[in-house]
Image 1: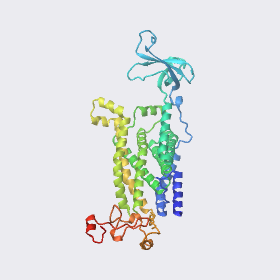
Image 2 (image 1 turned 30 degrees about the horizontal axis):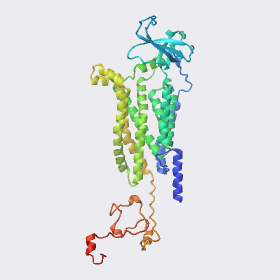
Image 3 (image 1 turned 90 degrees about the vertical axis):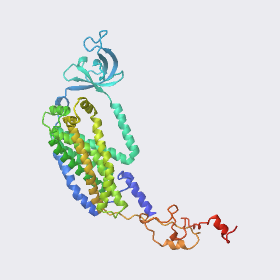
Length: 484
């Protein structure tokens, strides 16, 4: 009863905190704690010091009109849609070429007023209907009461985005429960680090790659420990993730320099002109590579660490070589799908760009080596190499740490208590014999019934002795002692 009570307490403790993989992790042994402290403490200190050094204390970043963005957004609702002309003769009979969209503004300097905006009637133009929520924009300094000052910028999509977010949270909580709640908390903290540290530091002129590495360290320490609990297993996954990220940074820097990648595209050029100061665009490219690889690295390192720990728990006699070999075999099956995920994710986001290059009539080699495509190819391949390397790196670290862990012996299965009405004294004789643990017992005899002829008559858990098998009917007829 005491053992059951302790087990229930341990299970309740694990569920209450949402850590682990359904089991409460046993405390790490003293050698494992010392080893992890030696490996992790310098990295933790470096991350904290780097965050303090790179954070832009006292920097006031200009935004909006101060940064040169003169467009002012205004929300409104479409009240009428008609076809007409595109110029001053828009209302003339027979005029065509545009769709006249009337919008009633709900905020801004001219809230409550209607403006009519001509939109070119082309196949690429969006379709508007009465009741659509839209976003208008006008340049600061122009007359907000004039229709000529406005242009249709976008649709309002706050409601469907909020609905999708609610569905996502509900799905995670329904399937993950407490573990899902911890994952949502970790996701929120990841966005906090990105918004409150990574973005302000880069905008303030700090080196984008250094900011991305420090930000990745903060995210890994917070996310992994919050999601999977503070344990030797999680610490090993953190080590594997950080080492793999360092490899990605090294390879990304080398091949972006060899390929003479500038990191400049239309969006980056606009950013540089708005900031008014220099920014390392190549470092910005590498920072995106590091941040983009974070989520998949988390998956790989946690999976590999858990696999090695379970192998060690299943067979405490396994040493480093056996743990590393078995964990690597598990990792190979995981790698193919993970690498394919990265490539397909890029192909999906860059599909319009790939279609445009396909229409250019250029060869595949020319397309892949063009600036816009080449930087994404380098980013994808460098991230994939980091993922591939994460398997042996994390497996080796987990094998070293798990090999030093003290694995408690498994509890022996209690022998079945025979019934008092059982015949014979064999039950009493068997009570004093020690029962071997189930994981050390080799099954022999009849695999269907579990009967071993060398151990005598088979006894059910209730104490009844199995009757000897009856001879065939023809033998019973020849047996003079058998009735009939």
